[in-house]
Length: 299
Image (cartoon, rainbow, N blue to C red; front, side, top):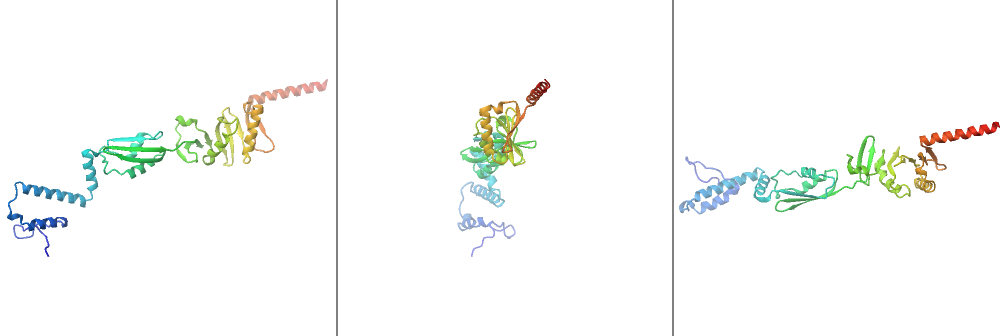
């Protein structure tokens, strides 16, 4: 059995260099051909040396675990670097934020780029519902996003957040076009508010007039209208109470009068709180009526 442990002897008859296992078979073949007895073409030695150096370099790269980095570097410099990024579907997420999540450095290779990891990083942005990342060779990365849909603003204490229809928080409110969204206030309003908003918007006379939906003790609701009037609803029988408000407003323009509140928390009665000016006027009218009554009684 032939065992190759060296490629010759040194100056003093000692063994030469020990070849790595993957080079031993080619060396055996060269030894069998007895290359030393044949006339080699010009520059053959140079070519063999160059090939040996290249093979040794590749072996070192593989053994050192740097093959992926070398592949990226080579492919990016021969025309496969990511030069363009196309972002579509983003309205709330800025392109700068998206690009930061992708993490390009100007020499990122298309060949070694991990689209799955890029999707994961982009999905961490607050507005992203879903995202697709595709390679378009030779040098373009296409990103298609679907963003979450804002439904309302939720205020708890001094903090205001944008929420979806299912009540999930999207991001902190920072003004802008989201200021026109319905406002729900209080603990528990984020979860029960969206469904309640849809219910109120179907009531005649209240569509578009409610500026705030206030959750009280996570049990019942107050409605703050655009003219400052507050409608206090009961814990149970909300549909009946809303229907009564709609009827009174249609027949007597209740919600357009000089009042500050309509209290429907008791099922057998409705209480109306007058505005300060109206209350003062009503007081004067009552005092005048009482004065006339006393004067008539004396005569």
